[in-house]
Length: 173
Image 1 (cartoon, rainbow, N blue to C red):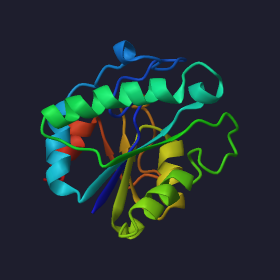
Image 2: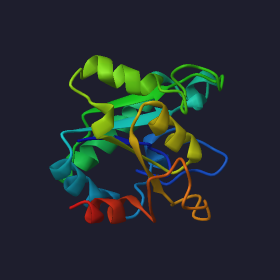
Image 3: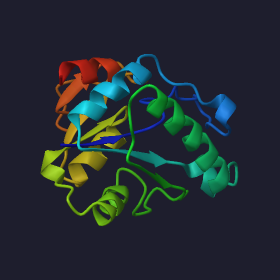
């Protein structure tokens, strides 16, 4: 099994109408550092797929993003979890092939890890765009209702819905 995770609103607290622009602004969402070791035991590979329009807008550099991600990965590893690869889309245009809900980042992952079988993959995210990304790549979808708890369920784009990543991780044990 393979897990694709959105970042903002799933791994870290989302900044409403803004962006995480430096490591000091990055805050893990409640339960995430407990969830990651459970997910690590359950999934062969774990990927992060994140739209980072702030780069295309000139608010953050790729180096700055990598600094934020290095800190995130270090904390996850110290907690006993892992992320195999992080994919990000810096593009501003919504129709960019790499920008979710388009499946470009899933295709990048498949290129880097040819063993990925999308029919054995789950996309966990906090927006319907994340769910559409999962569907576009042929994955199961898990809606993490941290930022949009009132999203109707059942929904044709959503296979399962959880209040947070920890509850999902506990349920699939």
